[in-house]
Length: 335
Image 1 (cartoon, one colour):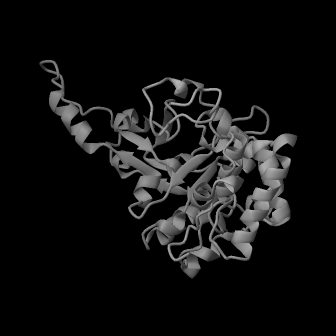
Image 2 (cartoon, one colour; image 1 turned 180 degrees about the horizontal axis):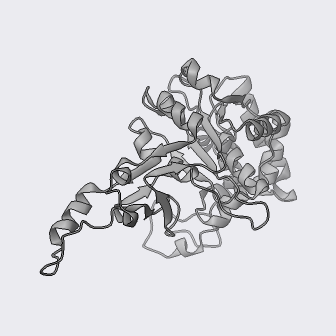
């Protein structure tokens, strides 16, 4: 195994005995850190285009969702974090969409089996009526349901709305966009499991857990009604068409891939390359832009960031053909 001084950025070797070099791993790239500070930084460092600023302001004024389309890695999701940071709207509520996502999952979950099991274990004292466990203990609001709650108070002007990011909605089942229409139009929804509790003052208000915390919130007679309509960003990789009624209720923003100058600005902002790496990172950026524009490779901006980060760690992709091809490999199967 080479000694640590001869390969300061290498940790796994073709041959060698077990070692502890992994203890000297440098900090992870900013986009691969999972603490709250890293999430906050996403919003702080994001520089929106003039068009994005215009459409965000329009969506805020109209209380309409903003549908953001564009290729992967163009900053669609990060726009939500930038709005939350600048407007001080708290943590972003994230709903990552899959083909199995349903409106119900976005609104709330109800553990009926858990409640039934707990009820079977409960034995009232002699002469006391049997009562089922508190229904609120088995309900947790989803990200969309939590966004419909009254926002956090700022102590001055009342309650602020939340920011909801519905990520990659184009992956959803065909029915989900239409299922969202009533929620977006009415700004409210019912929780039937609470609405059908006995008409008794004891059940008038039930406390449930929100999506992003352990402090319970009160729901009256099973109805959740937003006080301030949330700021909703829905992202799409533009891989499908949406029904006209859904599009009518949204504002739309098409994010273009960044230019070469914008790529340079993104790299400087996210990784702050030193003068030592200035020439190499400019060459990497030029190579990335050429592959994307002239060779028509389907590339995402974070692939360039990966390449520059490796350069900073002593692994220059321009000097390593296999690494360069792996890092800047097209996202399309046929390229």
